[in-house]
Image 1 (tube, helix red, strand yellow):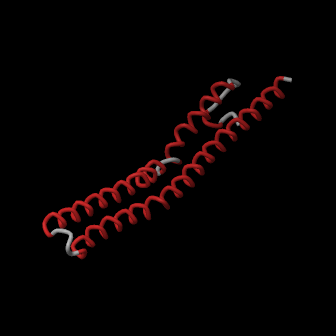
Image 2 (cartoon, one colour):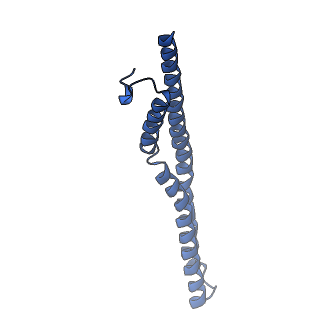
Length: 133
């Protein structure tokens, strides 16, 4: 056990610091894509909203140019608005569920590493006390 992480001697605080350092160094790689998933889940509805606004602008431009006499002229813009809203939500909803799943799993994994580190330190401390007796 003494050779673990290059630890030598009986300094328990050094061992704790080295284990914490290992966990902190590896936590970003465990949580590496969580932020990107959250970003895509957040941006997708905004892109849908942008498409909605563009579709409605097109509809109002058609009304301005040709009046309200022909509903077919307005249907294209309204359809574009609804389709982009739907697509934004179709992308965002599953990504939000996926983000929640990945985020909770990565947090649990880091927590497990911290718990195992604490257990390792406790066993190491027991070994030291047994050697002193």
